[in-house]
Amino acid sequence: MKSAVIVYPGSNCDRDAAVAIERVTGHAPTMVWHGESSLPEGLDFIMVPGGFSYGDYLRCGAIAARSPITADLIKQAEAGVPILGVCNGFQILIEAGLLPGALMRNEGLHFVCERAPLLVETSQTRFTSGYGDTKELTIPIAHHDGNYFADTETLDRLEGEGQVAFRYGNNPNGSARDIAGITNANGNVLGMMPHPERAVDAKHGGTDGVKLFESVMGSVQ
Amino acid sequence: MKARVHVYLKPGVLDPQGQAVATSLNHLGFEEVSAARQGKFIEIDLETADAEEAQKRVAEMCDKLLANPVIENYDIELSA
Image 1 (tube, one colour):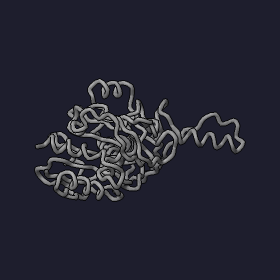
Image 2 (cartoon, chains in turn green, brown):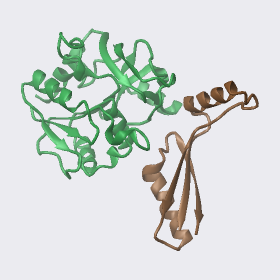
Image 3 (tube, one colour):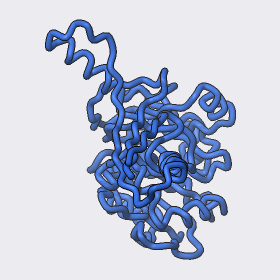
Image 4 (spheres, rainbow over the protein chains, first blue to last red):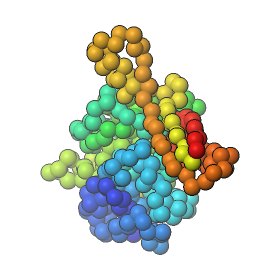
C-alpha cells in the first residue's frame, strides 16, 4: 500500500501517523512537506496529521488549508483516494472545504486530553468496515477546538446519508449531536478529532485504532 | 489605504469565550454586563488608492481566508 503523510509547520502527530501506518500496513508512508505542489503518484491513502499547524493562528487549520499542497489534495479527494484527517488534520480538511461544518473552541474552554469512549456509528465506510459489530472503542483525544458545528440542515443530511462515522460516548467538547468524525458524501474522506494513530500499540494507549487502518488497507486491495 | 476588518461569530453560534469574558466582567463588579461576544480585528495595509477596488479585494480576502462563512460574518472599514 502506497501512502503519504502531509507535514505542516507545527504538525506534531506526523511521526505517530507514520509509525501507525507502517505498523499496520507494513509499508512506511512518504512524508510530504506542505509546500510541495503535488503528492506522489499512485497513492492508496493520504493522512493529514494532528498538531498545531501555523500555531493555530487565525483559526485552527485555516492557514495550513491554503498551503500549496492543498490543490493536489483536493484533486486526490475528487479522484476517490482515501484521505484521513485527524484532530488538526480534521480542522484542515474542513477549512479546505473537503468536509462540511466547522470546529470551534471546546464548549468548556478546556483543552481535553484523555482516553475517550468512541462509538462506531456505522461500519459501512471504508474506514470503519473492520470494526464489524464492535460498537464502542477507546481512542485518545487531545484538542482545544473540537466542538463540531454545522447548521441543522447539514447535520440532518450527514445523519441521513450515513456520513457520521463516529460519535463520542461522553461528549467532551460540546459537539453537535456528539459528532466525533464525519465522512464526505463519497465516503473517501474521513475527518475525526480522536487519534486512532495513538491507539495501535497495547503498551501505549491500546489497539482500538488498528482496525481503522486495516479497513482502509482492505478497501484499496 | 488601510482596511480594518472585524470578524465575528454569527448570531446564534455559541461563543464560550465571550461568555467567559462576560462572567469575568461580572465578577469584577461590572454587573451591567449581560453578554459579550468575542471576535477578531485585522488591520491590513493596501497598496492602492481605489476604494471601490479595495472593498472588493478585501471582501475576497475575507471569503477566502479571514472569515469562516460557516460560523462568522465580517465588516470592512476603509480609510486613507
